[in-house]
Length: 364
Image (cartoon, rainbow, N blue to C red):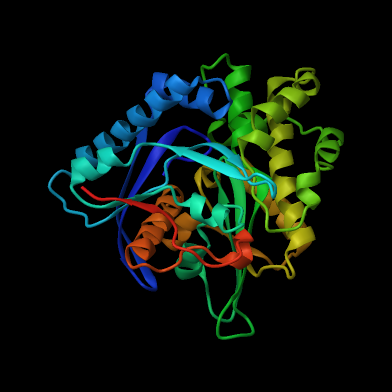
């Protein structure tokens, strides 16, 4: 899995069954600077068709090398490859999504089937193509008798509500809440002339002061009040958004600018909980790269506890799932479902007309 932040590839080796996923091994491969820049160009509509095609194959080779280097003689039976999203447009009229990374290189390197292009089938069935990690969240974090929300803080923030208090099966709701790391990372690159790619631990933001009037204005964006099912990406909360607000941010110190973007991220998450969850969760599990940003987590905690002081907030690391393993493990589970010819989407969360098989097979 390589997410919206376009910082690295996260690998997870899992033992998977119908209702269980066990983590065996995980590692990360950082993108080389040149490949990362090309992926950023592709994700911001700045790559030609020739460049896009070359990037698709170069990224596929990079995925394969990263897998081979660590697995060596260890044998896996199946691979789930999400790929790198460079375009996600879940409109009702003409929806589209595109993930780069040619699967044939992994199939050839590991000599096992590879499942990729997971989102297209859900979109073809009238869904948003996201979120797709709901099934994994239920298996890994759902608790009979409790209402748990799993919130992935990748480039984009998405929440899965698993309300298992009153029935044999949980009530599921999942949707994107807006930005997580993407605006913070983009601003950090811009403020440091590319020398830093992220605000590690939120150290810069923690020393700044958020400008609440700006945050209030940005929270009027119609995405936040729109009801689920909904999903978003860099097209809405990436470079276009940052470019629009940069004039306002450029009047602030770098520390205050990052504090304001971090506050916007935390408050937009809490706003979605208030507007769109039918009940307040008893537990919130934070996952993804943003769960390592201590200051962002502290602001999320403040705003969620303001909604309900009884809410317990943990990171996935505390529950045995390192933050960077949750998303790749989710696609390992989806690959298993595709191999077993079982639907992987949940129509109530993506908006699809029906449950469908997710992903396309590449067989060596």
